Image 1 (cartoon, helix red, strand yellow):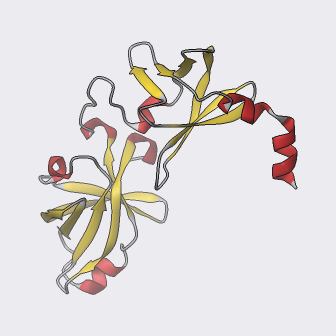
Image 2 (image 1 turned 90 degrees about the vertical axis):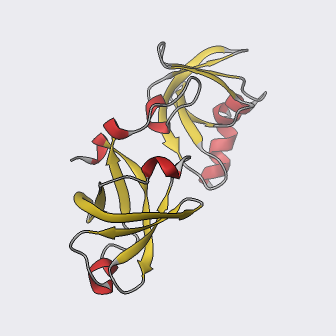
Image 3 (image 1 turned 90 degrees about the horizontal axis):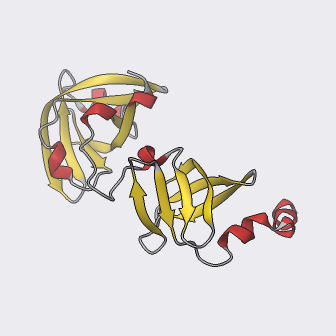
Length: 184
């Protein structure tokens, strides 16, 4: 399985106990949807390796204690602590109406309610406080916060994102003086 065929589910935070269990963070909106998983891919040295789940216990919030098959002591699981967890894209729950997964909106056209068609989504940035989409506009990257006040609608059929950008946001990225200030 290749990484571009998967989505990041979360990561292994630390060992849990002495019998080969790990505490995992699930970076998902509804952790309960993953309570019956029977396997995941673990990224080890930039390759995805399949791991079969013997037992999973959701612990509240976005955390789960997972016991993998054939890993029966703390020494065996210490090697995978801090590794990322992945699942194939085809098991990703369907997004509803205006909801979307970040990977889905790559290459969508951004249309502003005031300025019209602006550009194409070329990058996505996940941040601790908010996510950003990177749009190519006049050969420059413009970062757009992914917040409800700005992103009005995502149309999967037309592959478009309707936005209401704050005044001056696009112009901020077009100002050559801003480039000079960043370079200094």
